[in-house]
Length: 520
Image (cartoon, helix red, strand yellow):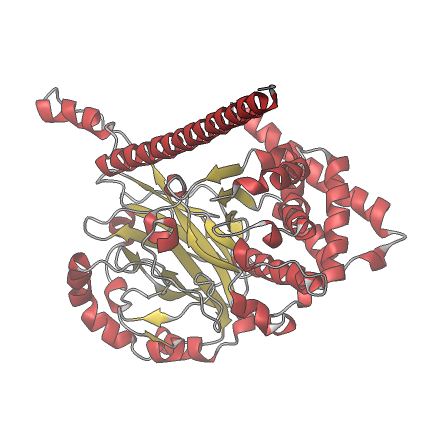
């Protein structure tokens, strides 16, 4: 089995090199001006990018090359590498028609389209396309390799809100320009009058995207997204309201907070000592008052409490990573996901940072759920060629969630002691900071009974029982669907009764007319 996997990896590497070589020989020689040189350079160095095109085209190199050619031409035409917030008309951000916010049940970021806020207008279509590209490019740079779930909220929308050219463009973004980006595409509360339009849209999607298409009513959307990330209009409890400025892409802004008002990064760095003193009080407070992750507030763990202790003791029981992200300053293991089990003994996961530079590298780790995790060490430095093991452990009775995220920040430093790290992070330029993000993956685990006691036998049986809240939700959804069908039947009955009455009246009129025409 290992030989098959090794051969498979070698085959993928060969296809990646073959793709690069053929692109260079067949597409670059006579038409290099078609592409942005920065995109070409990235194609030559980023294996994950090339593999993304190959995977989306089922490792057919010819198809992947066509996709790369079209994608890179589009990137140059739209100026993706230089597209900034200021190059998009302000009014587009103010409408709130498109934004990133929240996660689905699998932990994929939600990309919202409020269809009723879109009006077809040929004068603004190019700006709208750049607007969507801005969001996708922004997310791709911050969350490389992380898929999106696209949500078309079609509540109160109609035919006037459907621009087929714009819809086709959005589909091409996921079909061609950003391979492997699409996790799901959910159409919520689609009016029946739009069925014909969406039949056309489905013909554009292709088999890969069609398999990711989901239709949901307001009562069914919770099958894909938990209520905490759904607005009240869709039956959720998320208090988020779109406002601009700033941009509401909460994963990309990294303000720090002390379980209170959000403060700037500089102010927070100066208060690290306060956070250390308050850590015990905060943990006890957080166990009673749930902090809902409506905004992602990365909070560093205590620094002084991390420096002591034996490394072997700290890492004992931690799940070790098996994949590695090759970064410009640090290699990060795991590459994408921290894995936690659902059992009591699987509450630790290990991050390994390896310095690949010739200089000392400072690092710090932040999390979107500071009330749930303890990170040791959360801030320190790594010598050239050395590695640092970071233990991420769940605090108390907390459970890991696919929505939880970790941010690793790193920057090269010269002769800076650990006592001066706070000042270093204040002064380092943003452009010199490497960022890498990890999400959490919860592994299903089943406890094997050690003894044939009643408790150990009943536990696996109970664990397989459906959650009562989920069961009730399904029953309510079923009742609502039955009610809708019943209302439809009643409406049809009324129509039929009306038609019968019309026929009776027509027959009576015909009889009266016949009687009047007869000679007296």
